[in-house]
Image: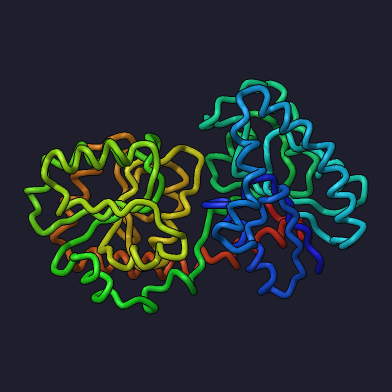
Length: 387
């Protein structure tokens, strides 16, 4: 079957991982998939300097201020009409799959005109709190409601997200909940020499609790470090490996150095996505200090695929994935003291960590490969299964 995958993202970081995961899974199932990206933002292009140049146009657009950016988003519908029209004539797809973006109605309109099934994947919405404040919220919701009621199907990344949409817009097109997933071939603990990697990072003989992600306030890494630095003495064998970059990294580094904990709290900074499995292989368990009510954290699945169970907040989307005490450990969200206590309590529990890690990988292998997501969206598009 010929499938057209359309997105209007920068095609990098987490969104790029998700796009490649779905596209590759559809191809492995025997389908022909063409990716139609924002100019200069093809997630299938190689990374590096050339890729950065190609992505510069998308990056420049995202830096436009407030309302100007939102007007650009609306105007992009005109571009989409021509680009989707050309892609339909050229490829003659039997299904269009779109990563939904705010104000983007043209693809649904074109698909309905041409009689082509269209499934929207919902990772963002006018209903949720966003990093960039939404100025034209009423218009965004009106467009969104129209799209959600007129597409062939909707794929939500969490049950909470789906319920929000139902509460706001009433009747929706058939929909399913499909959390994120992991590439179990890449995120495979058997492919990594754990002892060698730990030795390379001076972690021999340590119990390592790790984090991989953005150092942003909503991920809570700065609050976690502040809450745990004074208690690390309770577990002398415990070290923290916090991988990533972002606005709060400088402050975290200053705090760690200031309290003389640089040997206990490692902060390697930003690493390429290809290197993430190597860092996770060094960890005994992981921590996700904070998340939100609607998101499906990508790193959660990658940790679990590597056999590393996670201490995580009990938001609905996280609790849909982690079985507390079996494939990970939950704590009341926004309760940083409870998060720190869980991390400290698990440090000496070698067998419990190993068992939960093994069960976490088994869960991913069984239910949360990208192939599972691809099969679910295809069933939604053509069998109209969903709620």
